[in-house]
Length: 306
Image (cartoon, rainbow, N blue to C red; front, side):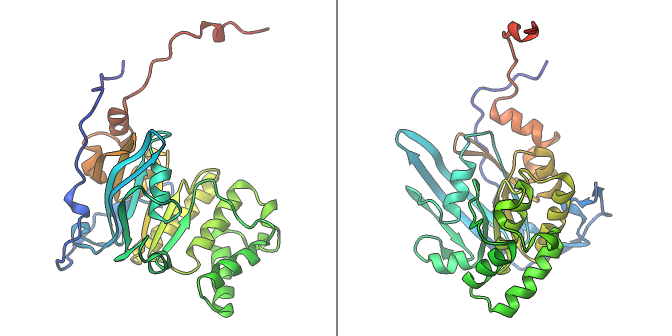
């Protein structure tokens, strides 16, 4: 029997670890590398800057979004330090996509603010979006372009010259295993290939922050491992990733920080160890989100139609 769960768990305040602090950085020696199926865990960097002392790249303050009488996002606040991978998890309809859409400037909030590297997304959108690469949910691309043309479009739109775009397109295609697909129309790509070319477009201008909504959906395990390795190298070089996913195991393995969002509210936020406590992230998530529901009834499903 699963443990009983409190019906209305009290929200856990965001940990001060993610708040901006003008202090000098310090480093510590990490333990020996641990590898999960070829993917390095967040604790395996040879020498890591203390998260608490890092510059904050993304600040989300009291975001609110309503659709009619439905409050989709209810005063969400988050701070994401540079050089970290920040996971956002929650059940379907929790407000994850709505929050990330407001963070990236795709959806205007009813209240609250978002700043990226000091630039407000809504009062200074050009500066804020210059520092961002975005992979939105329900992705729509110019799929009558070839992969090469789409990368060229994305690069020139970001102000890169043709030579730089060509070089970076070659590098990205090799990294994502898309070399043989660049000459084909994006409309002919599989769902996983479409996701990868979209991620390549988000990275081509080398942004400080990547905001990825379900980046591993429809991506096969081999490609997912390759994408994770690319993101980990990006973070190790000082980049910052905010991603949402329904895979608790994946988020636990690759993210430094995590926020659990339920019904438009952050119920827990902090380092992975702080949020999950002595159990797994999935166990903590089930505790806060309401736990498993026992399937009762539907006896008809056990008497087959033939």
